[in-house]
View 1 (spheres, rainbow, N blue to C red):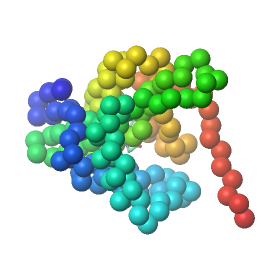
View 2 (cartoon, helix red, strand yellow):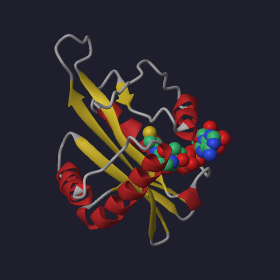
View 3 (tube, rainbow, N blue to C red):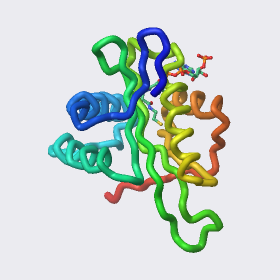
View 4 (cartoon, rainbow, N blue to C red):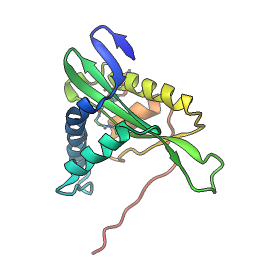
Length: 161
Ligand SMILES: CC(C)(COP(=O)(O)OP(=O)(O)OC[C@H]1O[C@@H](n2cnc3c(N)ncnc32)[C@H](O)[C@@H]1OP(=O)(O)O)[C@@H](O)C(=O)NCCC(=O)NCCS
């Protein structure tokens, strides 16, 4: 747990589920605005609630929340995933999601969330950490580049007509 001033970064509990799902939805809406190709199913919120509640209880994944006074202002999700046997590093870290509420941004909270996730992934002894960033999200690209991530792949998509 990291506590600086009135900001605490702590592991999420099932009691945080509603607030995390709400932030996930805010992030999804933000991504939909950036890129209309991001389209979510009508039951995406329910599916996410189920997914996150399982993740919170899993050994190989972890959620942390940033709490300011009584409010949650951000969260991050990290997991350990197994890749195909063709890779030198099969067990890798994966950063599933990170979000800081708009009014709390650019105060270092995203960086603190990332550092907490990174420390946990290091205890899992992963040699590589992957994540996905929307091409039209320059703020996030800048954020990750500043944290020494490098772009190594571009995902391309064709809509069938
Ligand atoms: C990306 C995000 C998590 C960053 O959180 P944050 O708390 O604002 O990040 P920090 O304050 O720790 O910022 C660290 C660095 O990121 C970069 N950054 C953050 N916001 C930025 C902005 N608006 N424009 C350009 N660079 C920015 C800067 O390099 C910044 O360093 P600086 O403050 O010294 O300039 C936050 O903007 C967010 O939640 N965005 C919406 C969801 C999203 O895009 N998630 C990422 C999915 S991959």
